[in-house]
Image (cartoon, rainbow, N blue to C red; front, top):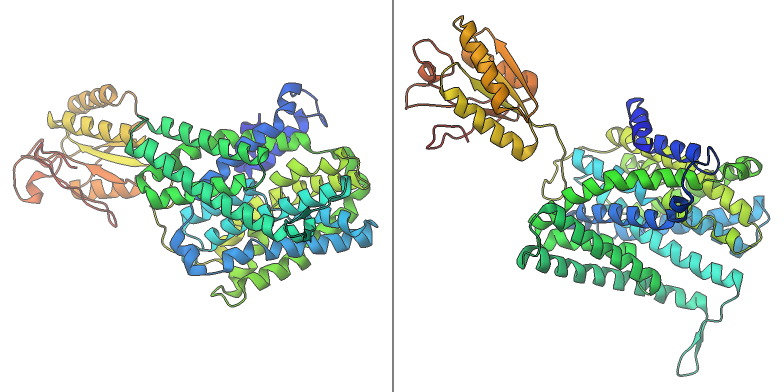
Length: 536
């Protein structure tokens, strides 16, 4: 249901995650209450797996050169916007909800965290399309988002311990006492440093196991092993919270690109497939966790707090983060739709204060749920909508980004026996790339019997491949080029015999049945003829 309602939303030009969240609300405790209690109990673990997958995808899509080009922008994006929003939300909560400073800052940490489940797919899509890649804007947002979540989760944990039971800090051997607040910078530095270091070590291990020692035989096995080790990092980080597991996972993907680009490319495809499944669990369970009944009393106040946090606190952080950079005003403005979505972290920790019996816990949960309902679908819609209006389109680096596309092969044949070899070659190439084949026959001589046999032959040789049989009646070169342009052919497969002038050997010319050569669509590329007489 999550998948199909998501696809309905996509066809209505609405982000698919909106449909999935709605299904979670309808099936969860707030709706029909038909989701299995065991599934709801496992929601946190399933969300952890889904976030691990999306962060590995983010790491495998980062570009070191673009990050280096941005200097300190990505680092500042990791701290200043989140800090600005957390402080602004805290002040607004003290004013509107009469929270004390610590409770208000606790709410600020929850609302200031950015959602990797919304931002990472959005930024990777922009990288595939080329929007903002020239200045590395998607890479800077991806890195900043991961760092900001590390910061806010640390402060949240510290505040929770302080409000629940108090915290005393530590006493150094020399007798110097450091409070928990004084330890916070050291904790952040330790979490980030160890997270990056462990990501580098895991990347080295994966290259050794999967590329050098060849413990695996397929791309599926590569993805399975990499996902298992990445999940182990996340679990270890929860058990021994001295490093950021999510940052370690993202760093693993980043270092894999630098250490072994072919392995990173294979893993990118595997994690793309895993995300297809993981996003359904993530967003349906996200919808199931939303407490609708607590939204009514805090709706107006909650929207005002969200607006203050985003438009004042976070906007000031964006301005300071990009100050002195080469970003234009439009590119800075893109941070509003591109860097504001909230979902995953809010779903994971929004109910924690209430579970600890803290004053204001119910209001905190309600505003966290409201932030998901408002910003997640809005962010998923706004990123692809405003990117073409605010960002510059550049050239995509195919070594850093997987570019999914529909591949069409054009097999130009006549009724001669050589058509069988052309069809076999087209079938071989189509199976390798899951492509569709257009079988083109240029009719120059009326031969219904020969065409019928050619159709049957195509049906036999392309039985497991999507294909269309097309006939045209026009000059051969024009017919091939027109068909290639009409169907968007990526490649043209044509046979050839001998070495005669081009006009004597093209498919279907009178006097030369079966003598075939190579052509190319306008703006496309030709393919060399090999010793077997078939286009490569």
